[in-house]
Length: 353
Ligand code: NAP
Ligand code: BGC
Ligand code: ZN
Image (tube, rainbow, N blue to C red; front, side, top):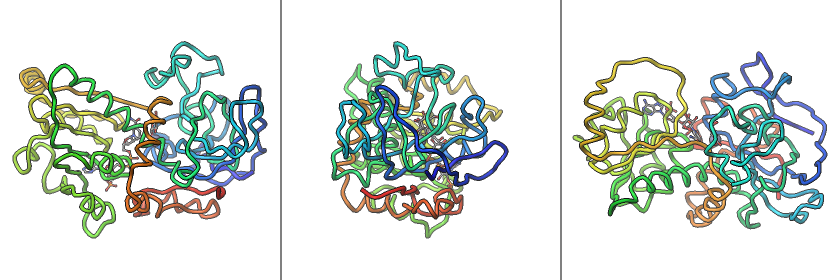
């Protein structure tokens, strides 16, 4: 079967011919429909994040998948069911308490593998297998859009944790500032479209499809080259909620300064080490005296996947159409990984429903 993988020493993914996997006890065989690509995939390809399965010379990519059950193999599924796999798996196949509780998303990185990212093959192949407890059902009509469930689930978790940090008082956020106009930032901006006022940070010139989408969503595009984050409270307004999806490490600090009193910043980016000077005294004072919160959040649970499926069902067609423009057939998979590709989201299609 066709599989898209990164090989040790390579700088770009390639198409491999791998044997179709056999489902083990408790596992279903899934025929892959589509698999999305995000910034993390690029970080994995560059060797900046994640790692190969132990003892192997390649990693099958892909963690944003949707497929159809081809062989239920005695699991609760029926052939033809549409499913989305979660990403984390117990290392060595040994389950543990966090996985049993459905809270593997709260584990530190050294206690989990991530399919397609770290230590375990991903879903970018014509078929994949998965234990049934890591497959979430999706309604039939959402099958073409199912590759968006995983990234939406990331923001379901981030928003849940951000709101939980403000649950002790009557927090009524009106403004939201998304840092980053990549696929995660734009999906999040679409999810936050009911806020009174939304803003999205980028560093691109017009015309650009991401800026068009920001504005169609009713948000204000903020170009960080003209208005760096520290100037945003004066030029625009202090923000109730900041969602960082740039992976630009200065934003972890600058997001705090952009917050209104009582606000919360969720940090999602996964930067590499970078040393720079920060006035920690002022930062510390600001967080304390203005009751600000900063929440780091990674990955998501099956519950977040189910919430994401509901969110996806509620997105208007014009938005989901925009996120499907970059779907390419597996034969053209290079386009989905091209750093110069300007569509707002890319995905590889392995088969049709
Ligand atoms: P992406 O496609 O690389 O998007 C990042 C965006 O941020 C790009 O559009 C980039 O602009 C923009 N950006 C970077 N630095 C900027 C700056 N200084 N000013 C303005 N814009 C800037 O990645 P993604 O898939 O959206 O993901 C975003 C980040 O979240 C990545 O670091 C990824 O690893 C991480 N992530 C984390 C989780 C989690 O569970 N925590 C889940 C998914 C992704 P240009 O394109 O113009 O360079
Ligand atoms: C994935 C998450 C994963 C994170 C860190 C993200 O792109 O969507 O599932 O936990 O990267 O590796
Ligand atoms: Zn991802």
